Length: 170
Image (cartoon, rainbow, N blue to C red; front, side, top):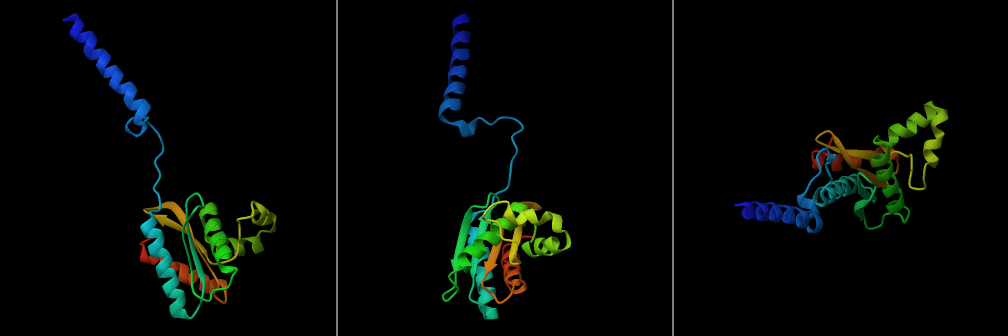
């Protein structure tokens, strides 16, 4: 009987060790934070809806969708959009995701509160110009969407809102 107990205990321990070494996803630590992510299909859907809205409004733009970490998930450039628009759309999306606020709101805030002008210089990816919106799904920030190329930031933002609406984001 003793041998059977030792063998069973050793086997369970060996299985746990092997699972830890070779299948780390199966062994989860208690209390790790869990975060929602922006799925690729929703990023593409938001980008396409945004581009369609701008096209309907007569604007040739670029649309960028980034995840919570500011990584590009989708980048679409309309035929004839200016060469600067992919960069500006990415930077607006990055800024909205990074700071968790609409970039137009941030631009207005900079005018009202001069002491926060340093926000513009946090890194070279920040662009505080209207047209970027945070993407929130089920109340959690999962990314940002940015538009560049319409004849005014309010038009960029309007197109971005269409993208959010298409995926049921806040």
